[in-house]
Image (cartoon, rainbow, N blue to C red; front, side):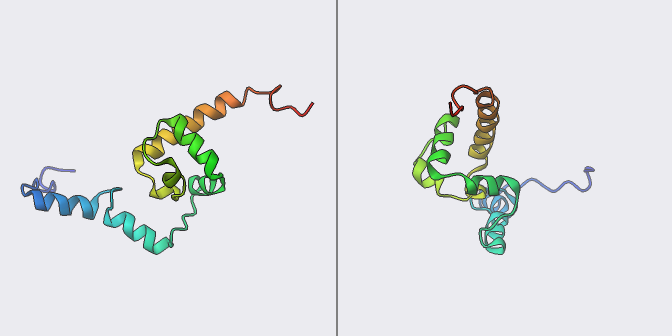
Length: 112
């Protein structure tokens, strides 16, 4: 972006709050609110579908392993896109680690 196109910094704290609510992502931004209304909470991306297929107990276990703080039961009931961005990133990192580690299990997963 060129210097001529760069917007002036926001000096008013009130303006900064409204700007972040209007253009921000997460924490109650208008963008996220519109996505919820428009999609009726039915997101069709792969992450949301996989999260929806998991049982609440497995969601809570993944959150516990990822170090997510808060009421895990309430968080596990949320849709994927309703989770805050830092928690989603932590969950994705933990899921990648779990896939790598649990993929090595053979004797424990056998039926013999």
